[in-house]
Length: 248
Ligand code: GLC
Image 1 (cartoon, protein in one colour):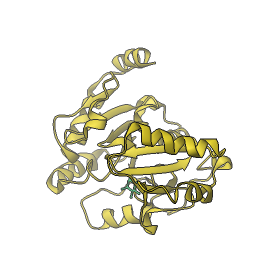
Image 2 (tube, rainbow, N blue to C red; image 1 turned 180 degrees about the vertical axis):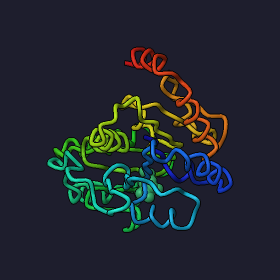
Image 3 (cartoon, rainbow, N blue to C red; image 1 turned 60 degrees about the vertical axis):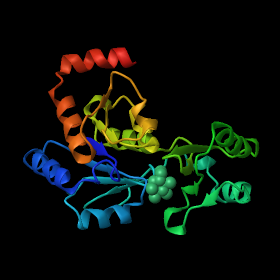
Image 4 (tube, helix red, strand yellow; image 1 turned 135 degrees about the horizontal axis):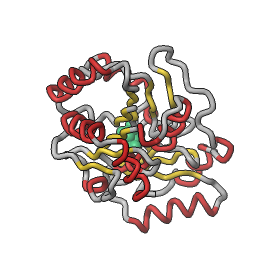
């Protein structure tokens, strides 16, 4: 299974994307393809319609808050798993008057995703916002990306856990999943025992990750995805097993 982010990862260089699509086509039967984006599935579908992106099996959208089967358009039942602690209204109430936070436009918000813009937020600021919610008894998962995007998601819900949930449904062990990304919200995909790929044009926040199960590609965008996927596909099963032991 290839689980890849779109903007800045598979999208960004149309010629490289066409090359990726050409490489994938003959082995499409053996490979499950999943797009894992911060955008909602509807917006992802628009990108698929107007680019060389191959048709995926599923779309994970809204930073892991939605999983949708591509052909049927049906959501995967049971996800998000942890909605019991989730209360979007309280987040709006508690953070609504924070001067450094600007609520993202309505098309980027959902009952399971409250997102702000917070330009160059410091660790202290991020901690303070999280503590404010925590002290009020609100359990959320906070994800900061690109030195700007601040997402609050249901606790236990992110791009990584959503991918793991889907892989489990498809009975695929974690080391059969290759996860590709370029910014902070993708890092959650590197904590689930998957093989990671960081594309060459990735932001520093992701490039600093250094672990045996993460491959830093030289090439950018879709060419970096292809380079990384080919790298992991060429690693033999016995080497993979050894890597799993080391990264455990
Ligand atoms: C996408 C989403 C945005 C989110 C960002 C980072 O750009 O549209 O809402 O904050 O990804 O996860």
